[in-house]
Image 1: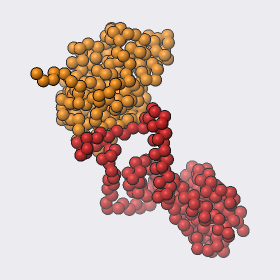
Image 2 (image 1 turned 30 degrees about the vertical axis):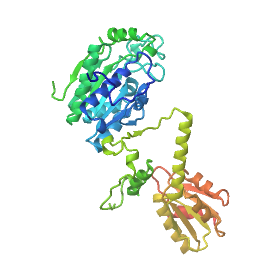
Image 3 (image 1 turned 120 degrees about the horizontal axis):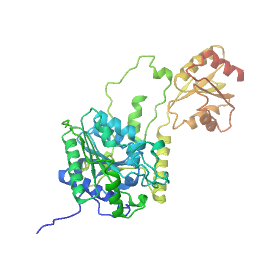
Image 4 (image 1 turned 30 degrees about the horizontal axis):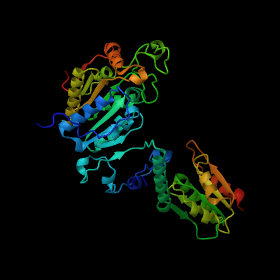
Length: 247
Length: 208
């Protein structure tokens, strides 16, 4: 009997710095599995964000670059345009992508840059200490909204997937989550679809992943998964918001 | 010079900043482009993230600036320092004008302003006043030894930093001369270009 389960070739054999219960580990694994399965490791370049995943290049085994905060889409644009044969992806959190990097992602999507973005939405700034993010839920307590996010002066959480889906430029935009095995399987399918569209040189692709941050949410990993499902999913519904076919 | 920026950027893996001004920005004169310009970085297999398939070795490349370990960061900074020192050794670029005679003043000026200074120097020469000019073509690395040597010439009484700015080069000139000669600044901003007459007046105020 052969091996039925093993570490993806794309993942380094090392210990990560992520907190217990953090869903970055699952997201990393899914990306690694997809790249393995598509056989593109030798021509893939990842762009690390600023945030918890800044050190992600230590956990993957292919070429990587590190971008300035929020500027991963600009870097990906440069690499992909110079070397269209490469498979380029950015991996960004909500503080990186939806705040300081908002302009970058909107214009990259609108230009139809042929790279893939994995967008980790855990409703909070992780690495910097649990500050409020553009995706923080109403009344959610963070270190900069200790009495809960007041929407009267901070507005409502930004729905990145829906917003990007309004752009006329063809794209693949979907939102998935990592809270249960069945969702993890769907998320992997979406990531594979996103990379496939890139391989076919079809369109920009973005997979938003509703994720958890037990440490900054002040919850156990299990409670965090429940909170994400109960509080985030009703506001951030799962689904495919746009495909290049236009459906 | 814009063309030279690219091979330099590739050689040092360092951004090269091209300084322009309003006249260059609005391209007021004809521009000649060379027929062929292609730059290819050397040793790119060692660092470029062009995909592992492009390399014979199984090494993966990583382009990053984050070093969390202080010793590692210190080592990285020493590497950068060595690179800047190499630039100082190999990339100082300047042009000398009217260095032949016993000049009484030295003008340091760059860009569009240096052309105005050239006219001023020609006219001062007709009046019997010899002035030399050192025109830095690269502002970093600044040609400090050349400015120092030129200013120390016995006949030279004063040095002028003449710029279309509020003296952004003055500190470099001052530092190069290390107190050996008095240094004066003259300049204008906002798109006004000092005339040769103004430059001549400035020089004459100090040097008789």
